[in-house]
Length: 129
Image 1 (cartoon, helix red, strand yellow):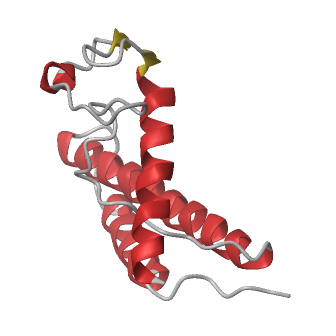
Image 2 (cartoon, rainbow, N blue to C red):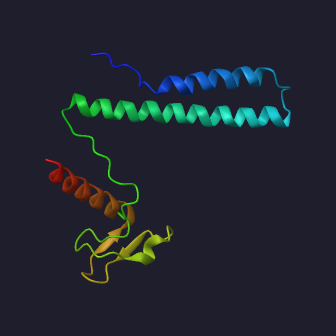
């Protein structure tokens, strides 16, 4: 089964072609050349991320999985995955490990967030079905 590229990818490829044409007309090493070069690099990164996102969503279809996106503002790192208590002082990203004040559970920030995102996704999907 061959998948088509995401339909919105062509707008980024068109923009890339225009920027590369603009870059070719700039004097190499000038400040404007550097600005365009940086913009092209950012656009390459964007295209790479769009393709990667599409691939992972297409793989979900292959393996009969549901792809569900949890709200980006969901406080996954601040909630205790055991008891659900929210700890607002965890907005500081330098805190990597913490202990819940309510239940005493010890958490590693990223693992706790992954558990919370999974629970929230399952909760939202249960409501949708």
